[in-house]
Length: 202
Ligand SMILES: [Fe+2]
Ligand SMILES: [Fe+2]
Image (cartoon, rainbow, N blue to C red):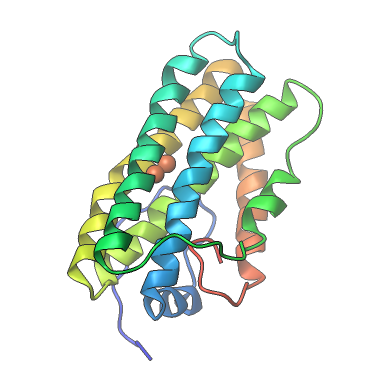
């Protein structure tokens, strides 16, 4: 079992925790499951962007930033599909961790709270992906996996920035920060209730 690993020198400051050693060890010892799960994460991230465009079709400035995110996430998805194929694997269904579903339960039903929570949760998921992909990029032993994660990192941080800006443009600074802090604590709590299978968001 791996003992020594590197942590990135920086992460998105709005995350209220860093990934546990347990997660790092689980992820690094199951590289293909993590890769397949990550393909699903990219697919779902594209779906979230498209879903928000459909839910708020006339929101000024929204489609202009979400449509490129959706396209970019699908490009990431395809990139992983090709890498899987090159490595002799293909996409398969995996039991998802409770992470996404538990976070979705925090989205308030009434507008505009629903919009604020949706932006912030989408952003938090991007921020966590950025932190975990950084760990995978730094510590993966397989060169092609290392290169893949390195190539995806920057866009996940940028996507966090886009969702954060969407929230800040529409809602007051105070409300946005306060709600992000609340949601970030819930996100940490969900991750602390460890899901035993190797997933990006176990
Ligand atoms: Fe992505
Ligand atoms: Fe993303």
